[in-house]
Length: 261
Image 1 (cartoon, helix red, strand yellow):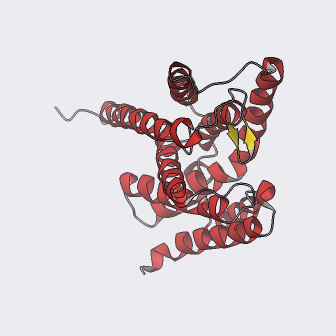
Image 2 (tube, helix red, strand yellow):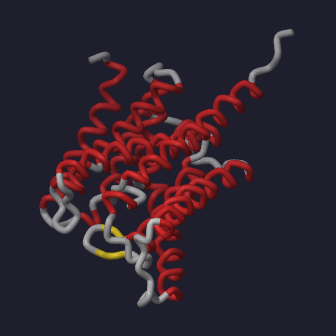
């Protein structure tokens, strides 16, 4: 392994090992918190700048894209679920559901800045960039690392484990979602922007479709088909959004390059 990659590899290995241990011992609800310590530790050891780690504010148009992701994709998944007759909302308390979306969304935004987004799209992104990797490789590697970190959640965590086929689907989907948040980070230069999108996604996805053993407000039980994170419909819509966002990212990069004519 090249010496320049020792720091990124060590950080990711530590994150996966710690989280897997916590998931296996019933501490899944807190398994992201150690990322705070790892973020601070590796950031300090590598002497990375705040800007390179992405702790900056993005532009208003960046936040518009961040909000568009959960609104468009979750909206599409909800629409497909309704059309297919997969929703059961007769007993749904919509006031509680909206409150849950807001609470989970806001809390995730705050926490993600210093855990999942701060670590993967912040420190790891900066560390790989410092190692000389180009933006596309950084985007792909951080997305794979993000997805790998989630494996223990669906294979070891009590109440969250999935059948083997769904595990594969979830991990692929996690990589695609990591790609989307990575593109938002690349476009904006900010982990705050990516965290806003991440928080709104979690708020909507978990409140409407549920997480682990908890059923969501829409009453969808066929999550292997309609789930936004563990379903086929979710994967397809995420892939489509990722493709569009990739084009937006490439377009903005071309505009930012000064003409030599």
